[in-house]
Image (cartoon, rainbow, N blue to C red; front, top):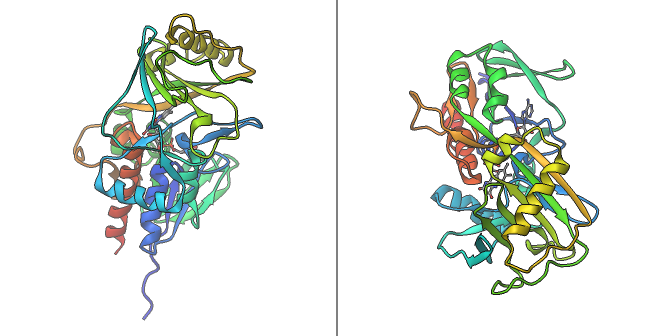
Length: 345
Ligand SMILES: Cc1cc2nc3c(=O)[nH]c(=O)nc-3n(C[C@H](O)[C@H](O)[C@H](O)COP(=O)(O)OP(=O)(O)OC[C@H]3O[C@@H](n4cnc5c(N)ncnc54)[C@H](O)[C@@H]3O)c2cc1C
């Protein structure tokens, strides 16, 4: 007697949530295919590679609180794709800098943030550069239709791990409850600028010469990191990532990248101790994240779950269903993966 083949799952979005879900399915021997509109995996954990430097413009580091995430992180550490960072974290207010101390473990991808998602994607089937525009079919037999009209499927289950505004048009024609849940999550935008310098930044009085990151109390700029001081990037010169405040980003969302980077560098100049001048940058740029950080979390029946799964085989996961960090996104995808495995076996 032949038994039914295991249900095939499609995952739209190969950020850390989609990958965590895929890994759980794959570990249970269940077939899974990932689709991402970008050239590779990573989503908001990806890096910009310039000839002179690698710049992280999304997540800069991640912290660890949950035991299941801690176990995953231990495996990544063994695989050599993460390292502790930042170890020299500062806070600055009106030119006064102070070392930021707490007991939280912080790590980052090495030699770039995308090393983590690249590691997670190893051995999985990923169709990159494939933007999924709509779903066709019904429970148990879904087809994914890409921007060129090509059909992919059938899949018994479809996981959508994109930010909720991008998930909404995919689920809305098929599932009013999931669509309503997406409407309850606000993903706020964020500008992430970068600047390269031919010479190192000048020394700051009373601050470690190799300070790695600083949180700022400023209406425009919230965080600055020095990419050349991240693990494995010693060969590159002074290269800053400058993350804007969310309110400020929202108000300036349609500004040009040139205007944005200029304003954020000016804010950083004002945050430096008196008398310290930033050298002239050799190259500049800025990336607009339209859906950077979830703000309002969906409520409803499944409020105690950090994913959504409907009887039709459609499911939602990602940071918007749990919280604004890498750890939240991983946990959301991982928990959904466990639920899909339990459902299939
Ligand atoms: C500027 C910035 C700084 C941050 N800093 C930190 C930090 O320091 N620490 C921290 O813990 N967190 C940080 N975060 C948050 C963290 O990056 C996210 O919480 C996490 O990466 C989200 O992962 P995800 O898998 O849920 O979503 P994403 O990473 O957004 O993945 C979704 C994927 O879906 C793909 N996609 C979307 N639509 C489609 C479609 N129609 N078809 C196919 N593919 C599609 C996208 O290309 C993307 O790869 C930061 C985020 C930003 C933007």
